[in-house]
Image (cartoon, rainbow, N blue to C red; front, top):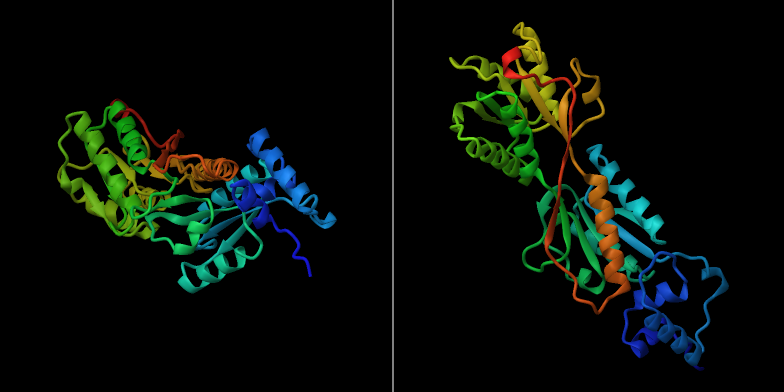
Length: 338
């Protein structure tokens, strides 16, 4: 029996990836494949007698997003929505595969993707962190979303946590505040370490001494913010402004300040982080920093599309940091009105 030619055979004959062959033969829209490569693939397919099955004519190339979890935080919606929109615009089908950070589940997902085949992979994490990649990922063009690796550099995109808290702290300094407290999270996660660096750097830039009594680390919860504010209120020289690791901490600060008879922002300015859905409904509405999850995901998909379209081109493998937007509301006031 004569063996029917496959996409792998065409790829080998043309010196391109199987993903590129799939994109050409399925006439995927939005892909950046050179006319010469497209012609070479089509000529090889015709010469070898390859026939695209009718049921596959309108089938889009698949890219998969492997992510460790999808239920514990509202932030995941930005990652999935941004990736889905970009994939659709570029002519790809996005499959989201939660692995619960389980190595066996990840191996099973990769084995399944090898049978489809997948054109490329977005390897994602819900919380920014360093990761160790499975060797099988080397078989696909891969972009890291909200994570990065140091042992085998790959294109990656993460939020600019450090610069975001620098921006928040500098805005409080520009409003005249010099006694600025920082209520952070535990150092176990990278965002905590980066954000407190941003706070310290902003103070140093404006020649304001860092007072460690104004820095409190702990739980990033409403209760954690409440307890932290109580400790700050016990100081002889109390802060006039607080920069919070997250909006939940800010909500706890609001509650404790209300109990103490303080008015925000007249007596105390507060900035949060995350732009949670409720932050605009707080009284007063909370000024906060917006994580760029949707933009990060779009960047990851667009970068992956470039890699798929030009597999032999040398691509930048550096870590890109996207800026966080400040959502200005009514929780910050100049010091002269405090």
